[in-house]
Image (cartoon, rainbow, N blue to C red):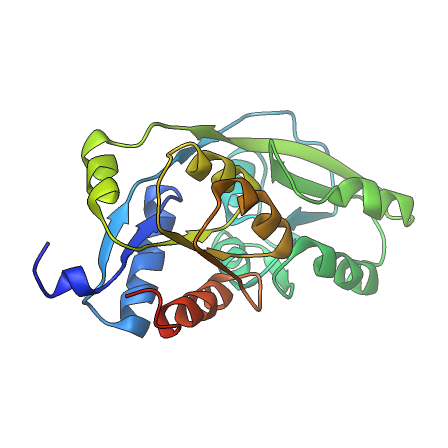
Length: 238
């Protein structure tokens, strides 16, 4: 780390490798190259192979569900209701006819109710979800099944990454899920400033005891970048 870079906080990215590298590029595009980035995935995506029931349309509340679902069931031309822009892009490239939601599962459901005319829905999801989409839609009169097509498995942080973080000054940490918050809490890091993707994730971050916490104004990468901008611009992140 150079003398110049010591003036800047360290950005800690704990999502799986590909997602972290993509976000690091977005971060540097917005804030410049002077911030050091530590990519230390605390989870990895493991595809599962459950039986896939017949359905006329799919629901994706995470981009991570698209590839495992496509590996098990045809995609081309099938409608997919997608939580936000990134998931919609992945589903579109996989061959789905996409209806893009506003960024979170709760606001996606009214959109499904508006556009879905008939037929069974299938929520392809991870082992853990924050919102019981299938239950809520079924209660509202839309037959909705589930298929758990992936799980997120915890992985240990590399010792050299942990040593670097313990020597760092301020650490900026985007947090995208309650599970990420729990795993981050287990690292015992200090001088953390957290950008949480939603109020529920912010609540899960309470046990970390961050120096500062900002909630993203929208539940997506752009919202997280805006929350980071508030932390960086506060004068306390340097």
